[in-house]
Length: 189
Image (cartoon, rainbow, N blue to C red; front, side, top):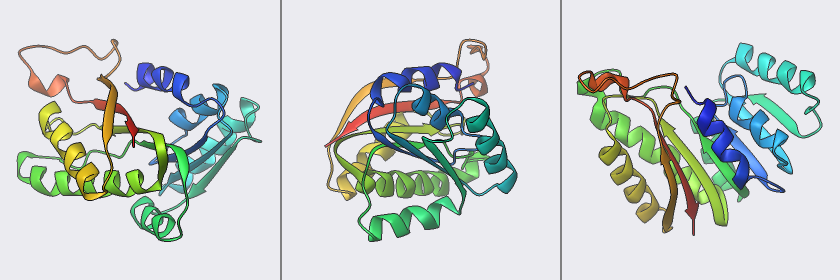
C-alpha cells in the first residue's frame, strides 16, 4: 500500500541523510538509498524485520549506504533529539496507533509526539514524510495533529504532497475504512 509513496519520496532524498523510523523491512529507506540518499539509518523494534532489511540492502547492493538497527523508536527519537543529532529527511511510518474509535485521542497524542520529535531532528528546510494507517484517524485530524506538533516544536510546515494508499488498494466510497492511509510529505522550516 506504500509503493507509490515510496516512489514519491525519491525526488526529495538525493544527497541527503535519511532517518527511517518504524522502517519494518526497509521499504522507504531502501528506496531512498536507491534514489541517491547520502546515508540511510532505519530503525524498527522487530529484530526479524531488521534482519530482512539488512538482507534486502545486500541483495540490492545498498549495504554501503544503509544501516538498520533494532530499536524502540519512541525512546531512540527522544535520545537523538537530546543529543542534538540532525537529519535532512525523516520518515515516520508507524503501525496503526488507533485500533478503534475509543483510541483516537491517545493515538493522536502518540502521532503528535513522534512527529514533534522528528521535526526537532530535522535541519531547517528538511523533509518530513509522515504516515498513519489508522483509518479511525481521518485526513483532517491527521493534518491538525501535524500543525499542533509543528507549533510545539517551534517549526513551520509547508505541505508538498498529501497522499493515500497505492491504486491497487482501492477506496470504496461506501466503506470509509478502505481510505485508511495518510502520507504527508512536508518541508520543515
